[in-house]
Length: 327
Image (cartoon, rainbow, N blue to C red):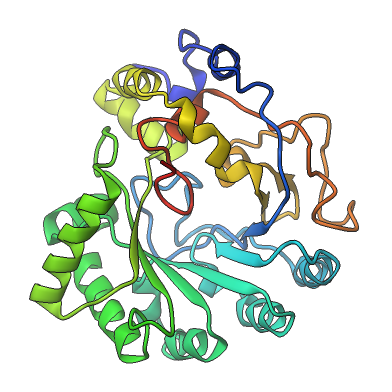
């Protein structure tokens, strides 16, 4: 059986490619976004999930960690955005306390929502809470067709996603005052199509079929790690996908990589350069730190960024970040 991508030994070194492009070493710039993985519990278990979340996962940031995040946000005026992810971040017991605390501090808050969570017991008023707090919603919808969505995320997910989007629209999301972005991931081992072209297709199909409107579509490349890597290995397509990413390395994406302006925190409070490094437990070089070891989120500005072969995923083609295509 083929090995998972992160264990392949014959892929070119990412740092070597950076040096050839005169982009090494890769260093952090000013930190403006704090992304927090509140926990791994989720109502779904998607094939592409790079943190391998699911209904049976129990890991979660404790209340002490949530308190510390709010203190660090208050002490870090350059950090204007709190980006909440998971798992399903809404399932965390202190999700609402963290959201309202950050909004009180004047920070933009992003909720990375899988949409179906809004129908789960106990979450019936979550969409209303998000709207009242002025939270930006970044919603996962890997395609505008039922077949592709359910191939990646499971039976019944497409219908639930559509109903959730319609409910968000009814609250004002996607109409200008409240921001609603959608996220596209390829179903298989391919790069996303051009973001602007695909966005136009989404707009036309979702409005025609369901009356749904949104602000922007973000295309994100599937990272060759964890659950997606294992699926590739089972199909014998792991090396094929890695070759695709390497062949499409684009040096123009490097300056816009999310790791240069974003700090990632896991459910234990440990700090990483990005969510993907967090999934692989790839520590910031020479700086094994937690949110309890720093007094300001900008302390790691200028620090070298940890890289590995999966970084080819963020630099392939038009590039990929939590904000969509880079170039």
